[in-house]
Length: 139
Image (cartoon, rainbow, N blue to C red; front, side, top):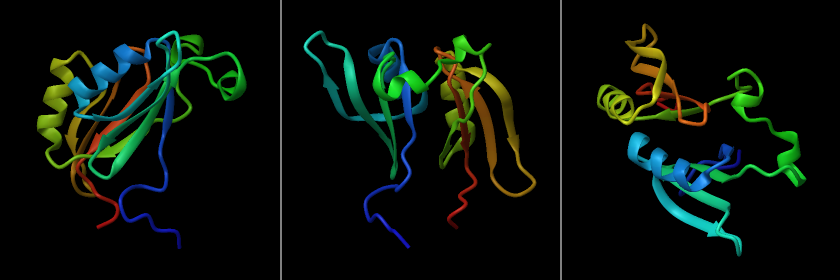
């Protein structure tokens, strides 16, 4: 079994048209913190690392070449996604209120779950889906 002491072994990577704006919004709305932001000579975000607890998401600008040519943005596929990041939070109700106040589009309202914990689903300003919940599958 692979085990990382200081973080997750699976890190979602997402692309945004305006990565700088996305990074600021994700920090404000969801409570992520910037760990690193690397730009090219034109100031485009080539790679960024945002952390939340022991988890991380990697962010980059939309690019039609390399790995990026295999990715679609939600507005290119009728607002849909093929996956979403799921984030465990300690106070799900407060997190929901914070995200809602910052303008997150709530897709699945906050609810207490019969299997334990609470959760909600939303999308960010560029249409990427996110799931936040207090259920911790590791416990």
